[in-house]
Length: 163
Image 1 (cartoon, rainbow, N blue to C red):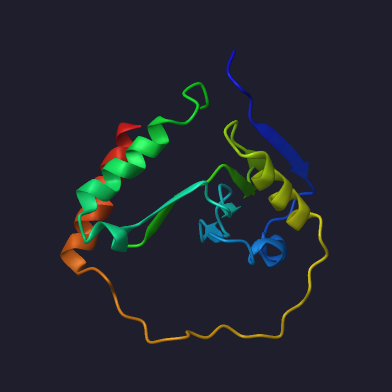
Image 2 (cartoon, rainbow, N blue to C red):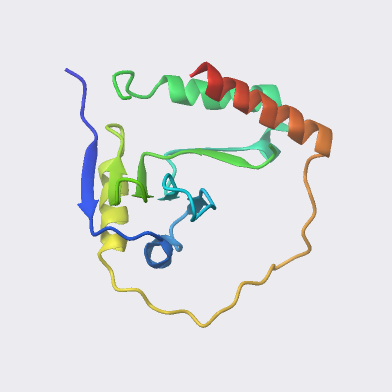
């Protein structure tokens, strides 16, 4: 019998901004937003604390090897559970789904116990309002050319379509 994931229902909120304040300090923090508040299927996701990370810079621009290593890590996860940059394998996420009116904290069966505790602890902490504004600490410069980036995105899309 395979392990089961965990779903923690939370009070519904259309935007996860307040929750983001509670989790933004965690390594690997990511906030994804479908970006269209006018459509019933708007979805927002927050995640942090990846179990594995794969920084493309560590692969000397060998995107094929980078994707192969990511695929290998995904293949080792519980099978019964349904760019230049960094890809992470995340086992927990906070999700707000406008159409169903739900906000939930979801954990994959392979989520390490310390990751669960850390995320749940951050969720239940009071937010400290920061008066800091966002600023880059250095000049932005791409680490991959446009053609290689497009090729990498197309390959990712092919993997998504293939399931």
